[in-house]
Every structure is written in structure tokens, then in C-alpha cells.
Image (cartoon, rainbow, N blue to C red; front, top):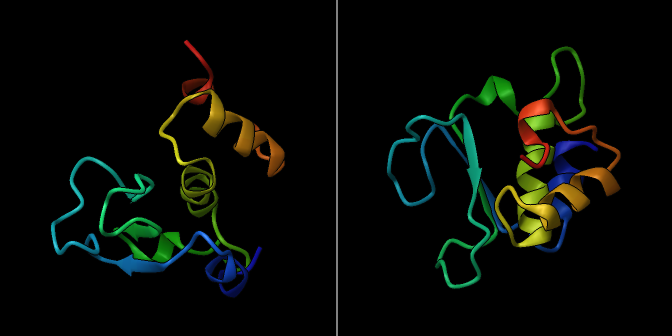
Length: 100
């Protein structure tokens, strides 16, 4: 998936790079998605480092971007619904992402 394809997904409203869309700093995380429908920034993906948007040497988005897209598509955090979307996108779950 390219960046333009990701941004064309209906649930994606925008991408904030360097800071959160709400102007706060991203602390203790490289990226997050505003997936709560009551959040005024619902649909935004925020990523700290622009080098993490694409896979190195590629026009394809990185795994971290796909993980955040999965949050928007599922409307959930790291739960079974999110895991199901990750799998439906063809992504293998890491050990840390598997159900504990």
C-alpha cells in the first residue's frame, strides 16, 4: 500500500508528522491513531518521525503505518478486533501483539 492509497482509505482523515494532530508531543510511542469516534481528531494518524512512514527504499508504507490503519479500521486498541484486522491485512502479529 502506498501513502496515497492509505490516505484515500475512507476512515483516514489525515496524517500528522512530528507531533500529534492535537499539537501535543508523542511521548513513549512512535505513532498512534485517533480511533475513538468521540475524539474530535478521529481518523487521524500521528507519527513522530517522517522516516517511519515508508519502508526504507520503497514507496510502500511501513508496518507501523499499517498498524495504525488497523486501529482506525477496527475502531479499537490492541484487542481481538484490532488483531483480526491486522490478520485480514496479511500482517503477522508479533509476540508482543498476540493475546496474552
